[in-house]
Image 1 (spheres, rainbow, N blue to C red):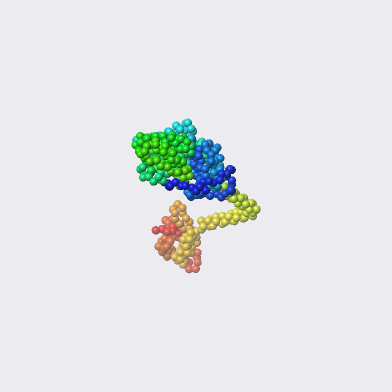
Image 2: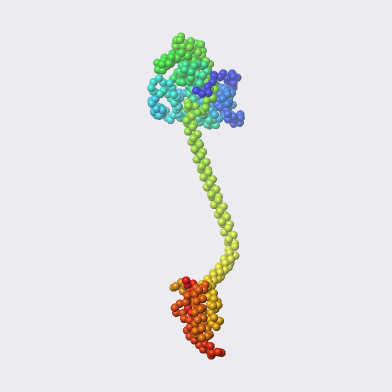
Length: 495
């Protein structure tokens, strides 16, 4: 076991706190979140103590027996007021008729089989008592089976206790059976780890007998409804039976016996006479306050905490619920933001539409003006295109001056035109003119001109229909010189 310590003897001034009636009053004392309220409700006896950072501050005992939940609620209110408890965390050491402890022998070949067997035993209990909180505690076994001590508490009983605490803004974090503080008390006995020991503890109207090893390894535990001061003989007989049972069932010889609580010399002598002279019987004044102080040092995740798994599931559910709520709020926030954005955009668009309506007349005038301008520009583009399509190619225009530069001075041009022939994909031209002089001289001059045109940059090619002279005319001019007409047809850029 972890976090154990020697029994604590509180200051008598602390344990004799004044008894007062009433319930917890708001603002009567400051709230201290680090304060922890410890309760022991063991077979009609109720003790309470305040621990601050695991240190005992005040303790108190209810003066009358507490056996029902109604009596527990009244005692709880008095404990809170009397101890001036301002924290929220509460732990409970519980032994009650409704809190059942069963010894079980489960299959040992696998942990899963053992859990399934224990689950079946719990289901049998639940058929008779309704849903229950349960925890299993491993015990020592000399057989092949795995041995467990099964602690079962009806959920209805737990729910009523937890409801009382929640109504007072208290959080019940631990419920432990009395066997746990008894195991922790083994460290205070100063025994070697493997030494078997029997502890008979005063637990209210009953006596709890536990056999374990000094290292905390539990063999078995049992409870008898008898007190040291009322029936020590019966307790002596039951202690002797427990010693014999440990020897028969576990092969363990118990020689160390401890009586915890209010047992006196008469009780020790009674036990000694029952178990024989070879046994060592000792008395230790251990109280519920000592047990609460040992439990206060334990974590809420202690393996024998009856509500550890329940609270773990509850916290996971609360965590998942918080995540779901946060996701819902985030979704709502995003939807709200989207709606607000859409409304803002709608308002902005409506405002823009109002502005457009105000300037509708001017915009229509501007549109008409631009339409007229576009139509004018379109007409201008068509005119430019027509002019570009119909204009004479630059190189055909250059043919005329080139031609004028190569013909003789006595010749003159009368007609010139050029065109693009879609069928042949060529530029063609037609030239007519006249030249003065005799026919032979003129023919030689024209042939020279044609040769220059063929070798020139425009690479003129005369067609077969082209003729140098088509006729002659005598104008009777001075000197009686004759004039011949010529007509040329051809194409440009011929190789």
